[in-house]
Length: 592
Image 1 (cartoon, rainbow, N blue to C red):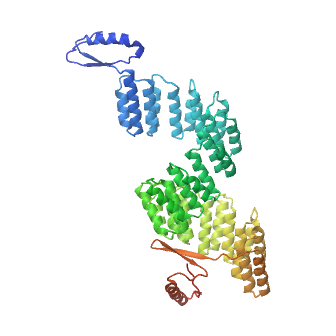
Image 2 (image 1 turned 180 degrees about the vertical axis):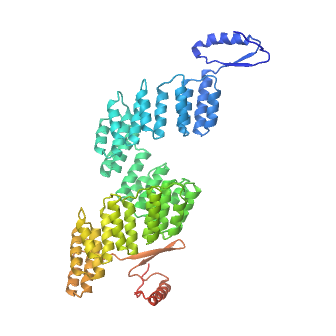
């Protein structure tokens, strides 16, 4: 070896020295050191390599991929762990192509290297590429089979997952758990239970997957039985049971479980708050949220959605605005599902302008977003806005579905556009090939009946491919009351009472039809029959929110402290309405 100009040039030679060859490498180092210090050799020991590997992983988890890569590139000698750490760091920071480049350039690979690439592809929804790496592997371990099978399960490719599970040369508790979770989530709950029963060893995740599967498939009693058998209960399975109790409407039992949790996480708080919201206990949901804030728990998007659901049901606009402010403060307002819930809340609270503002400022939209804004304007009877959004939706390449057309029909109903409702119904069937559901027929029949188009309404009732539901007969009966159609009214009432013998509204409307045509004996007969069944007319009520206080107006009650002022204002409004030619009856006002 010939070296020239040693005193003016510094040469760095990086040599990888395995621990076994340490003695020989020391002699080689001594040789270079004897060259008057002109050559410097940098060598990392195995301990230093391990320390660098840990630093790479730490930097990557912190999102500082640039620093991690600089450290990796400066390492004079690396082991396979170094390469695996850097490959993982890149795909975890959304740079799978760089992971692929490093994988190709690796001097040597182990099973972890291949497993890492499979996981990276699955993380980027590239299931087929992940499977290609799996098939190319020279050797596999049980983790290789598990990660690939779990990937198939995650993306609902259960046939391939089951095939892989059957081919596994060796299985562990993770293999069984992933498989039974996939079966349960795809409705094969009995197959999942058979697999669960064959497991020699079960862990907490196995029990949680099986119990959650029962809850999600609406088989709560079996979930509860298995829950009591579970030797040790963790937070995940208790939260699943809270959800199950709430689905069954047993919110008190759910709250009892919730209160028994010593260390609650955000998921358990959300489960209980959402359970209250979906069971009509909006006030309790809001109170629980206040308690959650008091203990220092930070809300996530699911929390805000549950709160917005409660505010929607109670028409609490100001509380809904507060929830919106929390979402902005916590930087959750870009979540699509949360924005959809915001639009619904503002619409149901009467602030349709805010619904549109949320929609217009959304960075990303899905089909639910379009359906939500169309439904919002449909509920307010703004037909032109609804059709305008429908056209915009088509321009954005979103394909309308059955929910979209149900909102369009609803808009026609609120606007009294019977002919247009027939056009939308026919467009749904002919152009988009959407099979009408009972809700579509019910809405259409209601519109046609209110417009007095009896022949069209009866034709669509006969054309229904299934037995007409109570909503359809209820619509017919309501229209018959409006137009005093005795013959059809009797038929509709009979059908409605066959489907729902406890429907007090059917008796009331039929009685009103008889009264309108002067058949007082029939009125008495219907009223007596209603009394024999022990039915009473549910009183109607409405409410409004003023200065964070809800005022309920209930038929038959005049106990509100401001009843005099309210009645005076109602008479003034009624006078203005009469002057405009409207028929008004404000002879009574009852409040609570």
